[in-house]
Image 1 (cartoon, rainbow, N blue to C red):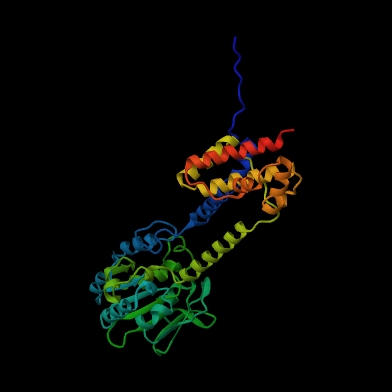
Image 2: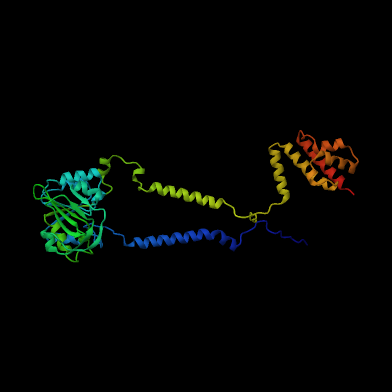
Length: 398
């Protein structure tokens, strides 16, 4: 009857606590990432979808004013390119530019040339300093904008006096045109400005804020009345929604490279990321205190290690290093046996006399064996190992 002996496993399997210790950092990062994603989704859940779009029924859309204008015989057409907008200008048309600041400088100049002398009305919604100088020369946008509020007309413009109070504010304007109507002042600066054309019946209207055109604000105060009067003075309304995909922007400004499409602060952001990565690398590379021993994933037998190292020596044909290792180890073991400190085990003048006295042998042969030249071939190396073993056995013999 034979009994099988079960050897202990050589693989050190990690425990559940070790797995949790290693993975808790990654788990915490994933939880924080998920929480950030949820927070961003909640914050952006009220994003203004379809803002100032006459086809949108969202709170920030403008479908309500377009429907009211349609009931009064004004047709509304949405255009998204500069070519369509300039082609639609005329004495019977009101051109509304939703976001003038999105237009490039050449686009703004071209649009102004098309509207000047057309005899129609141009309505610029929240035109800032980036566009007002080209689209309405002689007008300056004040850099300190006001918050949206209910303002009184404060001017003689018939449309404003009939509408009464309205939700305006935002960008405030000053002008050098003496015939301009400056309405709905906020801190003495106009938030609605009408500039008559030098010749003809056309004019340009600047709105500091789009609130009177939005679906959720149209029924408040005199917003609807003011919006209908400003946009319904002509039978046709062209609603221009500038688009970044407009081919005229690229053709007039020239082809832009990859770096031109990046935000203005990308360079500083990238620099900050590099600094953060360098600090993280320094933090992780710095060791505080002594090294902590870790369990090897696999226990390797000493004989396997010796055999593997020997094979490496043989593959590299390094008989000199193998012989040096064998002689050094033998000298280290022999020194205490003959009363020599280990620190002097590799000094021939200290080790050899003691060995000769102990063995009463030939000192020259011992010198050749322990400190001689490297063997010339593998057979000589094996013979050297056998002689070293025999010498050690001889010294250890009582």
